[in-house]
Amino acid sequence: MAAAVSTVVRRVEELGDLAQAHIQQLSEAAGEDDHFLIRASAALEKLKLLCGEEKECSNPSNLLELYTQAILDMTYFEENKLVDEDFPEDSSSQKVKELISFLSEPEILVKENNMHPKLCDLLGDELLECLSWRRGALLYMYCHSLTKRREWLLKKSSLLKKVKRHFLHIFDC
Image (cartoon, rainbow, N blue to C red; front, side):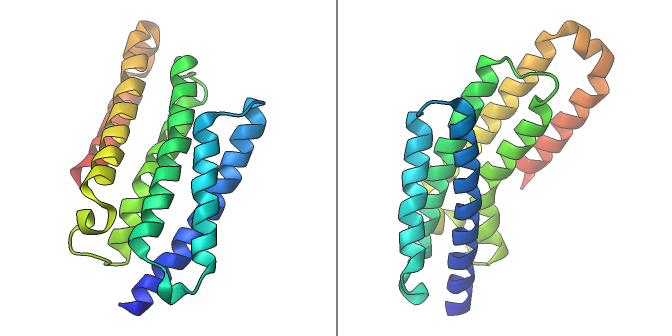
């Protein structure tokens, strides 16, 4: 169990560093301070401090909670940007996949390391539900924006079906 905890601590630290770099890029691109990016960055800084302490003393549940909260704040910023831009046709498909990946990472991490028989014991019911709802809402908004584009829908209905199947597979787990 101690090895699994140590592995989770290292992996959360790595993911936190990647997320922090992503937030930095988003902040620079936005050109202004955003409340959600600031909160995400603060959570990741706290995470970095906790991961820097003795690995054996780190509580994986607390680390995952901080990481998950940072991811929720960061992806919220990006989701709002996609909605404001009405899911740009040239880049939104890749961005939605990226956001779904970010929003799935905490659960994947727990499952890969067999940390707990029940995810809710480690991440908590509220965070699990929030991650699931956010993935579903993002998928709904994306598909809805595509179906509004009648012209696009006629040309690329096979792509829409493929996207729906891909994301439905995510929720099958």
